Image (cartoon, rainbow, N blue to C red):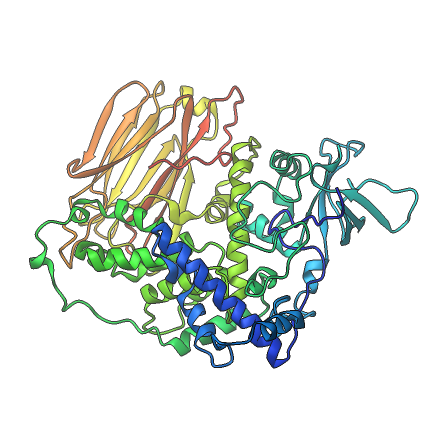
Length: 588
């Protein structure tokens, strides 16, 4: 079979040192010409396929950067022999020395593995090794580290070795530590390695690595250097750039200030009278926002230009802030910038559209976002692992109400359905409450359901009480103009679903707003009770078959009105204590 390389299971990057190209004028010219030529070829392929998205996927700016340079342009009449000589001078191989260096790519050579040890003590049989190096073929030599499950090598006090992927019965999976930290963030929302199930992760990876594979069967992005041996392709420097640039928060802050993303007022602009018929104007605002979350930046901009209702509905900064969390979960430096909110009059819409394009991992890219682009690519690969991981995840653990908010933020609270428009922009807080703790409460205790409404009749809170135990979600007092409605729940009954009602809103109205004004409470017995105004658009939150409603989760702004809403449910169980957080199932 001959020699070959294996690759990082999370980024598909090399585990060896990389080749840095030469710095001579001739070598730079050859390298830049090759990059410009390939960009043009990629653009031509895109146009032939009818995608017409070269600006975002292939980087028109990158092409111009290379093709418009006098140092890049080579005469059509250039002598063929001269061109071949230049190719032999290392210009067509290796990364740009102005972008990467031997020092900046050291991280690629530090390898860890996720392995399996059938002789490990205890239930868990997997381990994460200490630092190691890739030797050749499929072998990684590593130090034991601090994982007690690492197999003991009695022939050596310091080093151990293991074969990777499908080349043995005890295959291991190599990775860079920074890539693994990204995976942990995808799985848990933190960098706490103890929160992941290593055994489950190992078996997920095992299912994605057929025999003789050299990386997992997932999409790592458009890398062309992944061959029998790693090919250091000029123009793919982003793929070997460290995904966690130290101090990037300050770099980003300066870039934003230099770009001067200042908000502009559109309140005087009104084109509603020119709209004859626009199907987007008939969509509920939350469904429209959901559509936007699936669109790339250029498509979002195009839709805003084509539809006045979409343009008007997306004028609020809160939407773009949410999209920065929802659509850019890998950009935590940006999240901190948004949370600090220290840049006055910041235009979040244009900032989002700019960053969405600037961080796109495309061939030939340069500039300060190389590391973030690589992180974005790695995050997308890890998200595919996460999907299979969570499908197989059956672990449950006891928790308290105080644990809810941190867990929910880790699972992207911004994916909760919106029930208020416009979304609050100030003092937004995540709220949650566990209503059911035991099966005894479900089967044999009567309860009270109290709902709290603002002076304008918008929903502010729901509280369930079992005798003296009050469990409030949101507002819990009829003060300051708020009012209350009380509903009795019989001991033999319990809530099977909630339907929230919101008045119909005209998206063409610059002052349009809406929130929950009515609730239909559905019970296991089949009974239905309406509270408030149950007219207009409605959002059902129904409990799955063979599950219990155990709590609520959502958000509210500084006015206390519920702006996002979801239910927490637990599968039917014979245990008296109800599991609550695993799995969390949010229903729209």
